[in-house]
Length: 168
Image 1 (cartoon, rainbow, N blue to C red):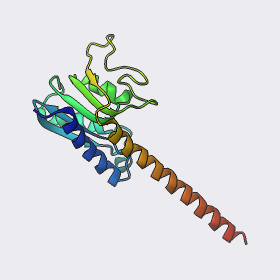
Image 2: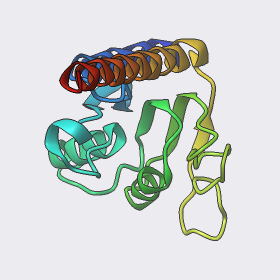
Image 3: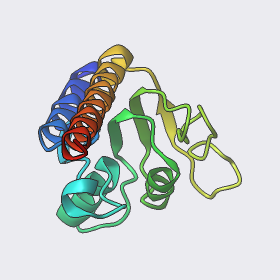
Image 4: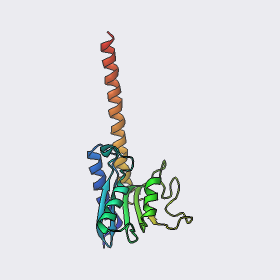
């Protein structure tokens, strides 16, 4: 049986696929009985779809391949703590366990900002394991946003120079 770190490394490979597309590098996969049943990575920009999060894409693929909306034996591995939308889908699809890497203080709904996945007011709760390969999962996000800020800064400078040239 493979451990959580093994599967999180595969989720990181999905995050790298997103990064290659200039998407926020988040990757996910769903495992049942030590078998990967689906994978996903962010495609919001590519598809211009607010719901194209890694987790939702992995859940949709798993439901399709299994022919069921119930993922009661599934473990979802994701590089960043699920947001409210993804946490809702995780609960609705009855995922048994969620394993995530980096915490998300702005939108994490698996215990950081709020804890939807273990709220006993819902008819389903998930087991949650956090911080698996936290540094690697957080590092890819930090590097992505640093590069994005640098690109924006460069574009802003280029635009200012162009305006100066035009106003001469």
